[in-house]
Amino acid sequence: MSQEGESPAAAPRGSARSGYTFDVKLWKITKTGRKSRPYRLRWLVAGEVKGATFATFPLAESRRAELWDAMNRRGEAFEIESGLPESEVRAAEEKARLDAAVEAALVSDPSWWDFSREFMKRRWRTAAAKTREGFADSLAAAALGMMGEGGDVPELTVVRRAIRWNIVPAHADEEPPAGLEEACAWLAGHSLPLSALKSSNVAEDVHYRFAYRLDGKLAGKETYKRRRRNFNAAMAYAIQKGYLEANPVAELERPATAQRGSIDPRILMNPVQAREFLVAVSYVGSVKRNRGRRLVAFFGCILYAAMRPAEVVALRKKDCHLPESGWGVLTLRETRPVAGKKWTDTGERHDKRGLKMRDPEADRPVPIPPELVAMLRAHLKEFGSAPDGRVFHNERGGLVGSTSYYRVWMEARLFALPPHKVDSPLAEKPYAGRAFCITQWLKAGLAVAEVARRAGTSPEVIDRHYSGLVDNSEEEDNQKIEKAMGWVAQEPDTA
Image (cartoon, rainbow, N blue to C red; front, side, top):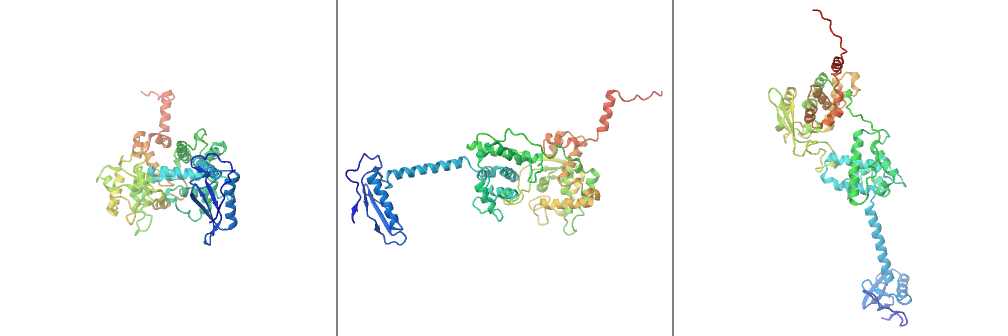
């Protein structure tokens, strides 16, 4: 094998730095016998053989010329480990540095698409299913203000669905479902980076999305508050990770929202209507399926104990004190809210949580009137309890679904209400029964704190949403004012 290519003696030589050498010999190109890369180039660097193969002879010859120029024309030292000229080693190091800088920049300024998924992965383990769903709605609303430009921009409704799918940790290694593939691909490439929130225009647009629906109408006050609260949590995480220095919407004022503070009085039944409604529930469905009769006591718990539907679903027989006469007590310990399979850890539609606004192990005793005691005793006698002890269950012993009891409620309205009231807000949904009970407790003279304790909420909520509905004492209060002011005419002395 012939050798050539040692640097001429006249070529300038200095002392090579550690790891480099001028002891380089370049060999001629040979053939390997392989079909794919049949040409081989080899060279010696400090006695170590280095080599490369090529698909064509011109490619091999071009590479040999590059190495020859580095040895003889530029007088470069070669790195012993890689066998490459110093200039090429430095170029590779610079490229690696730039690539690392680009990667670091991406990490320190992720897109909203990537950040929302990262944030939800952090919060998923400690959040309840309904809380996860609330975060999903908030992040999806913000995503509408974090959309870039270019390409075929997807519809806003599809964007919301794509974000809600993307942030579920279990979907990280899955392909998007049918109908979301293009939207997910577009958002992955066109979502604005977090740094875009430093622009006042972008921050204001994101803030606008919290208070308005997709049709441009105002969202409810509670919707806005939940979205902004969840976005603030996401921004706190971004600041902690070093993505941002401050919350970009912290100084923005809340816009007008659609919902008033007080409950709409038009939804409230009176006591007679409540009794008639429960009778109407018993007529819903065929006698064979018992759809309505299974839910008479269910709705009774809402109307006479102010229980939330999720609390009624979770009520167990062992937590019910139902004497033959007089008042009883329901000790509430957990809720079974409907959140959807993708938000729960079990893959079931219902989550299993402690009581709302209570410590996980806390309970809430609620006194119940004899009428409700009788309903529950009759229900247990006719239908029994579920295998796990729950009072209310469907025909198969499973959990009572929100769709099932909502349908029965709506059908019962047709029986219980006169035709001109069917299209009114009166008793428009099951939660109206809880409002009825709370207002009746207030009218009965119970202290706000006691009403809040029984209903499982705060006195502030009772005062803000319900106290204004108790106005039956207005005439009596007016008379007291007249008497205090001396405006009441003195009755003549007939003695």
